[in-house]
Image: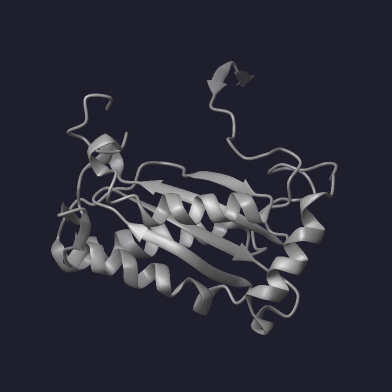
Length: 195
């Protein structure tokens, strides 16, 4: 842990040498504060969204409208978190996912220098993964709190994993798809003993 002005600060969870505004595929998890179940419930191993969950799903689907360099893939809104796959493609994004996969494969093996939030890959204003998630969380929070007069709060930050090949992409898609089936043993389930 580093110190800034004699105060400990939480280190970033992002890969320090990766350009999060460049071409890539990401597995993203966003949780609610204290894992409170705002979005609905699992019934017979199937997620049933309530109205707040439908708001969360609606704004997730709107991400490409606000960030034209984004293609969404598999996702699920669970009771207290969201899992999703985001493609960031800055070259001819409207040609579809195949083009994005080609671009992503080219970007996977690159080694960058001078990354991080203060380096050449500063995410502000570049349609980076952080900016996309910040927009999404803000829109959902604003709408839920406006419509339902709730104190809806996301957990600070989010988890991401860079998807580096087709094998990983396949595994992440399966994980997302089967997440409701495994809710009983999910670490995000507040009723789970491992919580």
